[in-house]
Image (cartoon, rainbow, N blue to C red):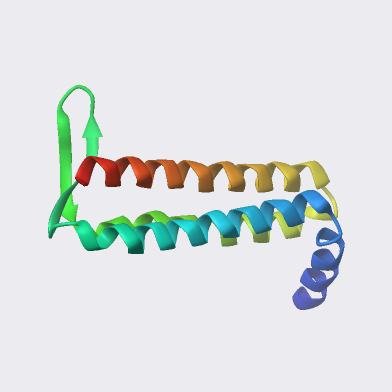
Length: 122
């Protein structure tokens, strides 16, 4: 019963260009996050600054592999928002559009924040 609901909802949702664009764009940005991090991680030391505050300067250090939380979080948000968008598409189309727009915005912010952390470290 639940699988039938998801199959029917996904068939309707994938016909919508905004849903397809949001999913494809978010997947591409998330893949770029993984590639960018893998490319830059060779230049990192064992312990790196992970957070910078304008009042106190660097206030959080951690191992370099904590940076993989950025694309991992992005992938989790992608899965959750996309499933919620599929579930709400049949009844609340505008809500699914907002979910996809927030998904795209979140992926962009994650990419920018990872780029900022990496430029501080390199």
